[in-house]
Amino acid sequence: AQKITQTQPGMFVQEKEAVTLDCTYDTSDPSYGLFWYKQPSSGEMIFLIYQGSYDQQNATEGRYSLNFQKARKSANLVISASQLGDSAMYFCAILNSNSGYALNFGKGTSLLVTP
Amino acid sequence: GAGVSQSPSNKVTEKGKDVELRCDPISGHTALYWYRQSLGQGLEFLIYFQGNSAPDKSGLPSDRFSAERTGGSVSTLTIQRTQQEDSAVYLCASTSTAGMTLHFGNGTRLTVT
Image (cartoon, rainbow over all chains, first blue to last red; front, side, top):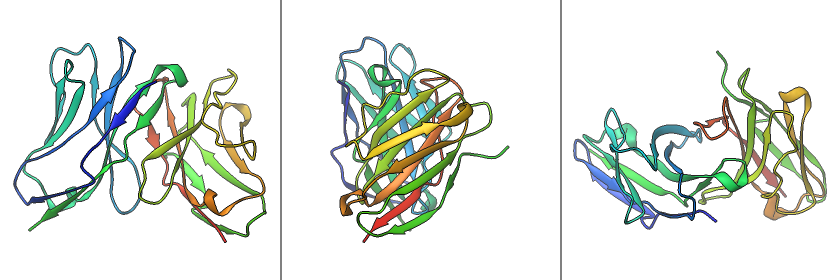
């Protein structure tokens, strides 16, 4: 079974600084996908970035990048130049091919960006 | 185009009553998922529909939970004889191809008193 672990329940970062949110995973599938979602206080789930297990390059989307270390089974999210609007819950998820491609989510990391 | 629509946005019910939660996916999306998010927790997978295939019900926590998807579009999640531990936000998501990015609705916040 696939499993996601996010060990940081809460993080603080100052505006304009970079921050790394940790995510480790466990899977027996040779092919898998990793996702990061943002959930602001409004409750909506916003897709941020995707990394395929066979992708040669680390995924990047604007200020978001994914530090993918396959041998260590980690997929950390890096947010550069943090903004106040980045304050939210961040969830890492892995694609579960054994369950209709449902995503298995971690428990999330709460990020607070301070002025 | 419209996103995933869920109704009601909030539902308060008494313990023991049945509730129905509705999800209207993005038009043309063939895959539909239900998740549950308890307070301060991550998302728990409940059930998955793909086209006309039999649904994957492996995440349903008990036989009080059921879901259907009519005509390959709208889905209804039903919880019978609700319990206080059923209180959570129920999120629906859809995608055009299984395994690609999920588009989530804003959820239904269920409170069982």
